[in-house]
Length: 361
Image 1: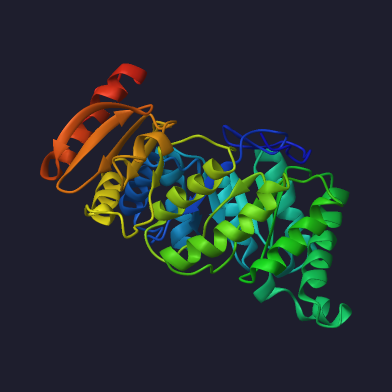
Image 2: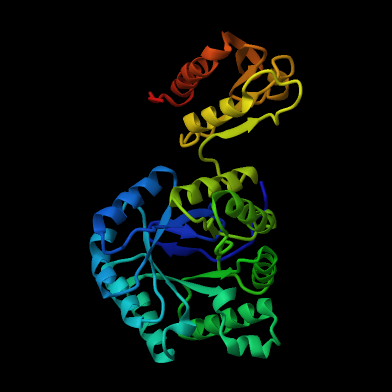
């Protein structure tokens, strides 16, 4: 297990972020917050794939008015995303959110920030202080002669000094850039100076495929150093994909276990079965299961079971036929046409045996 950076614990609803607690996976709804039912439906969908904290946009008073009902009915702690208008922040606190995402520098003066801090203290609401490379104030860029990383760090530190001088400490910090190296550099520098928990992400990472790769590189580098207490993989599209990608990153580093690990062979000249389609079908079949199983899809009957001997369940294909194996031992032989249905049957049995749960796949 990787050694985690020592940070203070911040309470966000029923969650604890930092303080050695598991890295929290979060996402953000892309519904119109004023549409309460649509927003809650998406929150339930996110919860079903393992999301633990959900952020909702609050662009206006109508959205703020919807928050009370959303918070009351949400299965997850709700964070409100606030820009510019301190009144929206105060309304979100009154609605019962667990956390506010603000940039104190764009709320409109220290007196207004002080009002938010006081309300947050009284209602036990955490603050996420966010600095993005694309919106860091010009004055900080001038002070640092255009060095974006130094400007982000200076901006965050100024904000933290004000908040801590006000006696407020329930803070999660976010330092994000769409540039992977800038994100790594600023988060590494921050973690060496402060003990506030860090929210990690590559902002505007991109579409599902490219955005996941960029996020995996940046977040992986930081998490492997023990930096990071909560993460969001920012992808264009269905936010459930963000949660799935986050868990894959965390599982790869043995930081969290949720859902199966699926390994599959690269195709090569020896492969005599439709391996790509089989691997995609198994991923579709099992990808959203919550059980931490190790599954394998191999292209060679001779070497497959041995190479994937640690798999709880696997399949390997040959010319027109294949085998199903558990922990390296062959349990069934099937024609290629029946290989996937047989794997499905054995997966249902395995889950029943290991977890006592009946599943319909």
